[in-house]
Image (cartoon, rainbow, N blue to C red):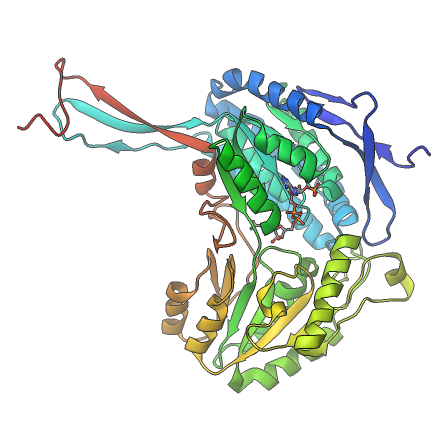
Length: 495
Ligand code: NAP
């Protein structure tokens, strides 16, 4: 049967096209289960063509002055600004986050592209003194080559842009493989670079199964680096395969992010933060607040406040600006989260929610109730990434207990403490094992000019965004300029 939705091809070497005999898949609106768009299930042969195009385009792109590359990024940012409302709506329709967050996703993209455009006029190296006379030492940054960017669905325009803009400004060429269920959002991203005039082959777009074409991209010997954001299982697979080719693999993986709420906290402020952190984007942010570590002295009071506030929290149509939380992103997501809720019901006390919502609009999509469990530290729901609107509340007796619980998980992406005690806030900055710590703010809310990433199973040490992104996508070359007109031997020629 012919597809009822618009069909899109692959973008390889500056041209959109559908390979002969290509199989297709559709993306689905999680609020209505309606198909949105149809994409090519690319093959290993398509990946081969995309990488070949990226490799062929690399010499000319790397020699384009970085400020000129920046000009292209500024044009892309302007185009995205002009169509922010339209693309934000696509984000909400395809991924399910509420419209304010859909627009926020696009705004983050715009901010990041503009920030990276400026890097075209910075991209600083160092000058370093030499131990010898008449010798000048410096470092310069150079591109790596063809970069494979593999992205998840939860920030379906922002994460592709975090990778594309940073890779391109650094002089690399790119093959993007977006998450299959948000391919239209990624296609909108590619369109703005295309319309901004990206040269053929510099940016390529292949859609299809991560297990097939993601794997092929990672293993292709012409791909010099892989920038991957997604879950731990896929991330580990990508890391191992990339290691075989001795390539740089940058991983941004999951989280189990805690808010520690102390007895002296501003409770109304913390209430809004916990709510937004736990249930914003239906809990499907890598930085979502999935654990509330609550001081025993305010335990009952705060839990009561949370319950009252949730009574006024609306779940429903994500395109309605009054809605607090939309659906979860897919049938797979719904299934996985409901399985965790069943685990929680066995090992913890269900405080609130814990079900699939039914009736009216709920019957058409993947809507779950915001869920709160009261649990002991160490249960599965308090340790494993659920990636849904499920908050585990854990009672602690003091700050040290809170930090012990916060740190005793496999992940270390974001963290937060609510306290009015400045000494305790600074101790938390030292003590929390995480790439990000917020003081008196929720665990979510990255800004593009600051590094982003985590410790432990959240990644392998790199950071995205900020100037750290340039480090991810460049090689450092060390340069020695000897203007003494004689052979000078470091470590050997003594004064
Ligand atoms: P995922 O299942 O790991 O998929 C991520 C991407 O990898 C998708 O494009 C996927 O393709 C592809 N893929 C899957 N298996 C692969 C393989 N073996 N080789 C190469 N590529 C492969 O993750 P997700 O469900 O999309 O996203 C949720 C996860 O992302 C959560 O764990 C979340 O915490 C994490 N995340 C982390 C950050 C961060 O910055 N730390 C930010 C956002 C999300 P298909 O779509 O075709 O399967």
